[in-house]
Length: 59
Image 1 (tube, rainbow, N blue to C red):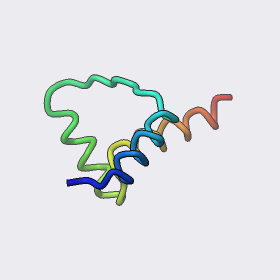
Image 2: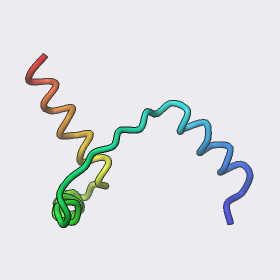
Image 3: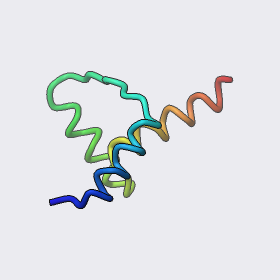
Image 4: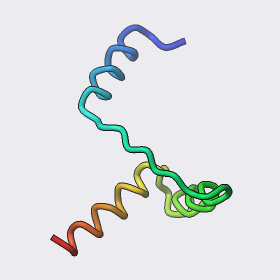
């Protein structure tokens, strides 16, 4: 069970974020997640790093 402080901190953090739905074909998520983990990253961190890298080279 999470403490009230943790719940409050999570809510504060999530208010700063936007949600993006990204759809892939069945089975592809597992492949992407495995690649992220092989790099020591979460799926979210991996996707953000790819987007950041692309945007840096195309702005």
